[in-house]
Length: 400
Length: 153
Image (cartoon, rainbow over all chains, first blue to last red; front, side):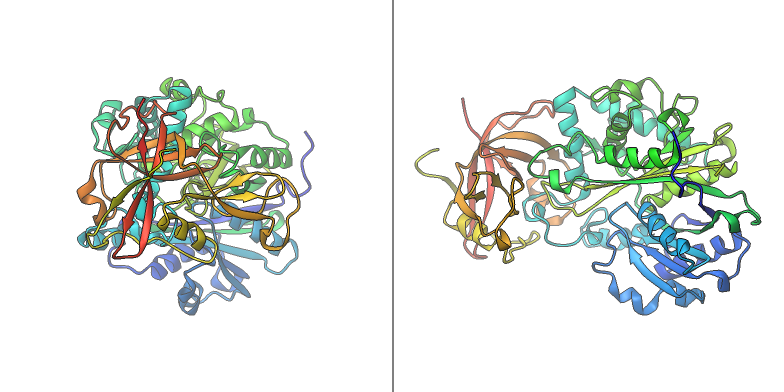
């Protein structure tokens, strides 16, 4: 397949990660620090950064106070533009698309993209008030809130529940996803759950939160920040680290289908996103060496494995039970441990792991001859019975 | 539909998140207070939506003026459900465990709410049960919540 002219024209040259609980630090200091690390990793200085994008779950809708005290002010970058964007867990995918348009016009030579959260620290505070999880992070007012649909674990579990009802998928099969990701986390010292092996029995014995979801179907609640620097392929060549090229990007959106066609409970908006991304890159699924699939819950991984075509619709349960996505499997998935077992920084978790795999920096979990990695994002407004509706697909490669 | 809708009256102080009532759904919430479940129907083609939307099948008049709220049967089938064993908000703690379902209304749209009453399903794989709306009045707060119960037989 012929490549799109934009394929391989832009590259990630710097990565900065702040991981683990940060109870004594503000979100903006974590943001500034991971940004500083990313700039240094790229062999650049603050003066080289022409623009910055602050990746937030709520995008432009509700975090405006931060504009008065941005991480770029704290760090002192010389950027000519700064804005927030994001839609739930769809952060890096959207940010890369925006950054490329600034690079394309020469508005900036290097764009800094950053996302930071202090969910874990905040959860410790809200827990004392009787709330569990990240109740504070979700906006008031979506339909089910007064009725008992209190949190993401509630409405996301319908996807798994519907898949179980239609295709006979079992909780043990969902557990196989959590177990595979935990096995990857045990090869990643940065992962929150490193050193804590897990079996399907452990998954089955973990408390039921919102049946069908057990505790071990849920992702981590994390502190941390991830930043990366994007530039043109020409500028990327003389940087200290191997460039990671953007080969293709695609987006899907099922908001129109939400209430009427009832499709988004066993499918995600993968179809358009996949064809756009793979079409630009001139690649097929067989070219993907590992995949970082958005995994806020186990069910999302199941749906994506089917939607991308690693197995047929409805056969995801048997596929994951076969060991296909764990270490040594046919398609390694979420090789850092993912949101389930590493940390939850939206799709930045997968983006960071993709960069490390393509640079050959993934240590014990390094995929041999890793040339192409798929990173996906997922998110949207939490209006039940609608679901997170966006899907982003980003193909990164070791070669342009 | 039964002649008299099922109604529960709750006078305890409301300690859960409040419903979000705005210009788009005020008529719907007023309907609940009158013990009517309203859905949004296109006068041109008969397509039914919930919540309010422009008709998806053809061009619309300004502000979807070709659509109107009409009373639904209040019946539907379970599309998917879950059973909450943990309260993310303290207001739900005393109700644990509770069932929450996506209900496919007989008119077509999906709506979601808590299941109440007897004969609630326990196997997540089992869906399609017929349900009927229960109006839960909160006279002190001035709103009515739609919940669903399993229809027997």
